[in-house]
Length: 258
Image (cartoon, rainbow, N blue to C red; front, side, top):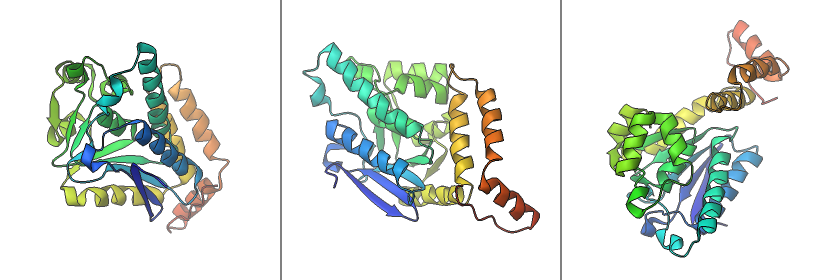
């Protein structure tokens, strides 16, 4: 079905792998279009409860964009390219099902931006992160200036983007850019371990948490008011009834997402 990505569904987790290891999994138009289709699958298919985005091979998660595609672009075409990237990455960020980036190797430029669009990140010990666009006379174009600042703070984000420096997985963990650092062979298992915990929770509540957390960073949204509304909306769900009954009966809840 796909030419530049691969997908595997197991235990209700869709693993989406950028599959251009000979090109360090660089993003091009085809990758972005196919990634958008895979994300649509996550939204639409009930059997998919969560997703992991990773890179094929041992060297790279995504080592940036395919720079050869940039050489003939006009300013208008460049802006159109960035807008498409923003749309796809925002759809990942706003997915009501959890999406984890499992970062193996280089996550540079658009690759770092893709990882940051996921709900959180797990890195292998050999992972490297960076926004080196200034080395090409560019700036991050797929949300990097905004998400990196949100995740690590203005000062650190400014330094990383102005110098174009790469940082190690350990440094990324210290900055709060990644949640966990594990050996490469344990990377996917760690991501799956976390997602299986989430799968045991109420799906509607999970979606509402994701929505409300994003609202905390949206200047145009009153996140506190949204939390009140979404908290109230939980009382119309069967899952709340099941969760409360299971708690009082001292048993594990059986959530249905209703």
